[in-house]
Length: 77
Image (cartoon, rainbow, N blue to C red; front, side, top):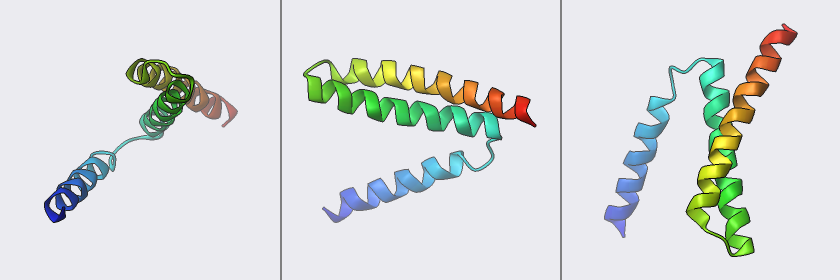
């Protein structure tokens, strides 16, 4: 159990370091994709559908929404 926890901790630290140098557009697109994938996976799990398909579709829609939100924010400035 301790070995699995250490592996998860190391993977999390490496993943967060990869996001450190992103600009606003990249951060919003990635955040939208991650949120969309989570919502898609949960939604399809609750309805009995294909969880990986729901996560993929949700991630794509979320990434697009994050990008559009970023473009809207830039046009407001």
